[in-house]
Length: 304
Image (spheres, rainbow, N blue to C red):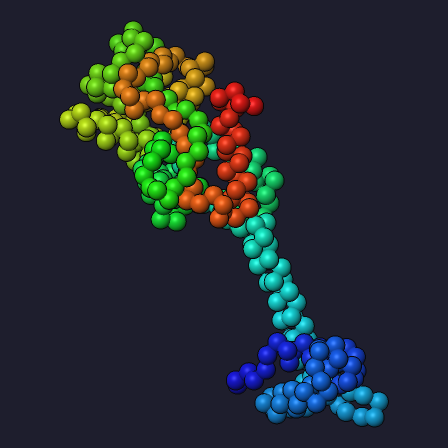
């Protein structure tokens, strides 16, 4: 059966039922009495049943009218919830923020930052994805991501870049490995040895493969594993060597027989940047995450 009524009809029915009066119900609905009466008559015509008993004392609901008003109240209540939810999104209180980050930012910095941020934003969800730096910038440029953390400081006129942290990649070996005698090496010197690497899904995995390919060499992964701690434990077990962020390496070198060796290659030292397409157009909750990241990055530079 086609529904020939709208929200005004539902609100009118609720108001008339509550007042037990067509006149008062019309007033509460901001309708004239003739307009309200016509709406009720049309409802009854299209539904094929009477909705009110009419007498000199006013109006009371028929069983059909009671069912209609019961459901109308549910619909109107849900509509109020809908309006409230949409208003929270519109005002920047509730929503979702999409963050794309390179491997170092994803694993080293974002866990603590997001724990702090989410505690203060219970109605905001964060979608966090790991990508190579150039893909982070691309995602922000095309609107796939709201916020990016990247080692690339350019790539689009529409992108705004803010300084974040320093990302230094280092070589990690067992302390008895032949390369452990060196304080610094070229990446090219390491490619004759077996590697422990992160999984193929990680951005650093793809980055190192490309770095080796640029040298016309092949990077030989004996083990691919899920995180920096597991990689360091594999290296400590002399399964191979690895390249990971210095901040991660220093956490595990205290308890494991590892040696941290600097890489001479220019790409080993990268400055991370926060990137957004148009900061002023971000929702309030996304701006607050950017501000939190900027504040976190300023600690490294001694600004706070």
